[in-house]
Image (cartoon, rainbow, N blue to C red):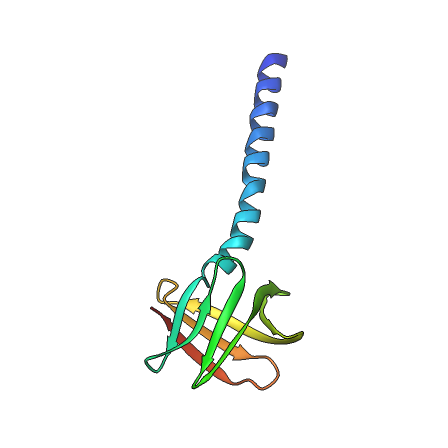
Length: 112
């Protein structure tokens, strides 16, 4: 009986340790889903890189900065200025909807 309890206890411990690693991966996957080129109205607007940098295109103006997920918001930082967005993915992560927190302006992007 004691050997069975020890084996069950060890098995439960291993399962708990194994599942605890899943949380770290899911946190990274939010950022990983952003990686790529995002278009709006047929034009490239954002390129998110795996090193957590991004490039933004607004007509002739190109801007580069960093991005992170903070307090469940997508935060884009350029030159020390940060802008926060509520964001969501749909269409098997091929559509990204970003809503600027301060203005509630909504943009919908499609992954290229």
